[in-house]
Image (tube, rainbow, N blue to C red; front, side, top):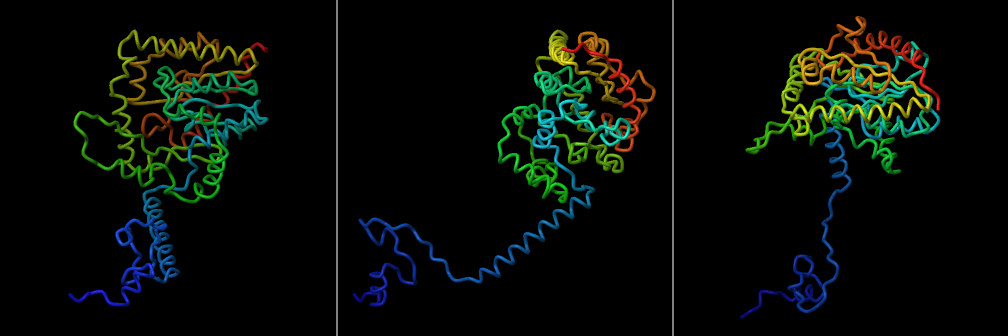
Length: 385
């Protein structure tokens, strides 16, 4: 039978290639160790291909940026662990005598650093964390001998007295922050965050995909994630996102998320009156011990119960009434406190989603708050160690 393989094919096979300039495979060379595979890459106009890919990437990037800017997003610094660590480390690097603000998102959103600076001549260090009790931060400052300044502690009852810590990893991150993490934060804060709106974590592609209305697995009850509420500056001065004031549908979305959290069942350890009281007592005891350490070192401490309204305030008063929480906290810590309901100038501010002040109102609130805080600091004379 005549062979279908020509003499040129035999020559090609002997040369180590298969007909059509294709590399020999293992089946073509039984019992022979195979060389490192080399893929045959045909000649292509690679310069044109790379240029086309770059143009397409830039067009896609521009379209994504335009989409979110049209939605109302503006470039804003990330309220990241790196940003918090940068401010926390100021205390250890020569600024330990400054006024420091801790608390949850109400202190973060509602106390404006420029207005504070205009009144006092000094800009505080902002260490408040959203969704997180300030008690661990309070303990961290108490254990740091570098901190000898003044401390404002914001109290949001549902966070302070429960010990909830949405951002609870920030202290460990700060202590173990690697050089690459510091460099990464610097690059992001200087090259991306001030210029790109879509860099906001709430509008990252994977986040957008996750919050699509996918089918829910039977037996699960996923809780909605809190959406974007604020914009932050380089030193974590933070203001409510104006969209909450101007966009009724987005405001309703934020309120709906709060309502689901407000009406959700409590965690098991707080499900009974006795369990709830144990949690409250534990948080107050931790705060009292830390405040005692700070006051012994000469640090002035003032507690501030920040404003809330509507269903949020009603829930706080029902579950964590003032007599069982705030009043006991001040009694146990022997520190002065400012409760917004005791001061007419701290009431009746616009709070679009019941828990935080709008940006213009936060400026007005800070101007009203600072003289009261300064008076408390001046009359509070802790014993020096």
